[in-house]
Amino acid sequence: MIVGVPTEVKPDEYRVAITPIGVRELTEHGHQVLIQKGAGEGSAISDSDYEAQGARIIEGAAAVFAESEMVLGVKEPQPQEIGMLRPGQTLFTYLHLAPAPELTKGLCESNAICVAYETVEDGQGRLPLLAPMSEVAGKIATQAGAFMLEKPLGGRGILLGGVPGVPPANVMVIGGGAVGLHAASIAIGMEADVFVYDVSLEKLRELDVAFAGRASTVFSSTLSIEEKLPLMDLVIGGVLVHGARAPHVITRKQLGLMKAHAVLVDVAIDQGGCFETSRPTTHGDPTYEVDGIIHYCVTNMPGAVPITSTYALTNATLPYVLALADHGVVEAARRDPGLKFGINVADGKVTHPAVAEGVGMEYVPPDAVLGIGAPDAEVPGSRGAGATAAHAIPNGN
Ligand SMILES: NC(=O)c1ccc[n+]([C@@H]2O[C@H](COP(=O)([O-])OP(=O)(O)OC[C@H]3O[C@@H](n4cnc5c(N)ncnc54)[C@H](O)[C@@H]3O)[C@@H](O)[C@H]2O)c1
Image 1 (tube, rainbow, N blue to C red):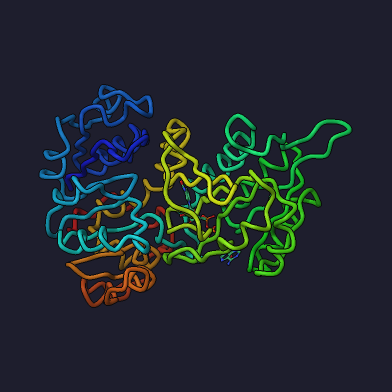
Image 2: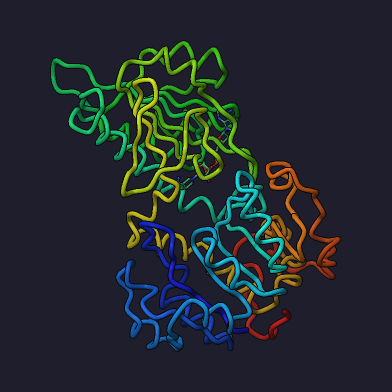
């Protein structure tokens, strides 16, 4: 298969969808890799690093899209990229379609098969391609929140960890998944008083053990959040209902309960935001104020630390990229039912139920559109990353 990697064009996005490690693996599997000139520069990967492992460097995104059977990305396609997609071509990237009806329509019109990193599941129903970026974003959320709490940046002017004789700041983390765990870990490390909220008792039990008494776990509800909000200096939102638009866990009215110039960090902004007053921001202009509360809502937080994020992302995506290149999307999804959940749009139809609900379009199961069906025979370890990295089977797409 011909696999293409264009340069990311979202503002302040420095990640790239493949490293020389991935180029080497794909070429050893008999595939061709096209990289847009300069695509790796933001992540400190030169064209010659890619070439040394067998990639061909080509000029311009249009040529990459035109020549590739599968296009790998990091962020959702930007308006100028949607028109470059071709019918039947596979796009494998983050999409976050539930809050994005225009983008969803554009992808449907392209007739490409669009597979979203964030809805691929493993054998336990977890999200293996979202997790690495959530780990990064969770850690940044606390760093950014601590910074924005400084007075010259508009915050209350409180140090997260306090000092001897002066108490630390209070940090509320809503959603105790990958984002929440990592945000809370950094807040604990910075010696803040930390409260983690989740609706899953199982998750709260795991966190309670992981934190070993250094943070409080709280069952999340309107009342339990409201009771503690007046005490909070920093609130980090990392809730997720798989594929769906984020639920609002803090309303505009509830901002009135908070201390003036407290900080909200909405990590779930890529799924529409979990605070009613959230709207997307960029690294260049990350915050705004509503009713005296500072909002930080950057949609591509890991993009700021590409040297960490590119490798964290591609470590997770590579086994799936190999499976898609070796077998084509239909056979790869047949062998790995978790990958099937990643197919959000195919042949002009929305093929993920939560996305369809989010954008108000009809849901058509991917099996009906692509004829995936069940695996012909049990493939050992077929659920989850790396399951289908069989060398010998040629392209199926
Ligand atoms: N802004 C960015 O740059 C960026 C980067 C990475 C991830 N994200 C986003 O962060 C969000 C969280 O990702 P994750 O990997 O941590 O997800 P996750 O599935 O690991 O965790 C989400 C948690 O939210 C909990 N939850 C759901 N509804 C809740 C509610 N009403 N109240 C409290 N908890 C609730 C779930 O039980 C789960 O434990 C996603 O929307 C993801 O796309 C954003």
